[in-house]
Image (cartoon, rainbow, N blue to C red; front, top):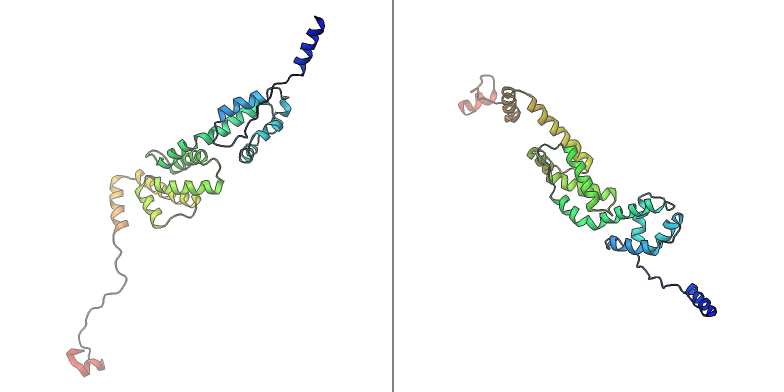
Length: 226
């Protein structure tokens, strides 16, 4: 009886369940489902080796994004897993943030700097893989289209800014002018605006006909017809 028991224990000790293979995670996959399977697969991994064992479970694109976060590979599970969840959740939510970004317009009580800052937050989530240069191009396009002040929008249409920095500089100047006008009394504004928008007189001197001149040879020759 003891011999049978020992043989059973020996077979049990040698038995190892087959570990299911896990497809490499790619941005856009179901990160929650992947995380459950990855945690199950790596549950016996020493904490200091988690990052090294985790990288082979990410595809090249996901690995680059994870390394770009700056989280050290030797970090423990309490740091690595939350970082991954936050990173890849942004990829899954990108379409929703893209819609918000595309429809975002400047609010009336919002400064141009506040509007640009909000656009940057939305653009970062709407385009999680884009470089800073590409993000600035998207923000510039949305900024010029969504600005609320008609004069600023007209200024942009007449002379499209070449960069987000240029657009912000011009928008700040026009915003400061509007704010300065609001500080003035209504009588002063009424006096300033006609002067500002009054058509400029022609600089060509007016020439009046003086009639025939006695010392002009053309006048002596042609008389009144001169």
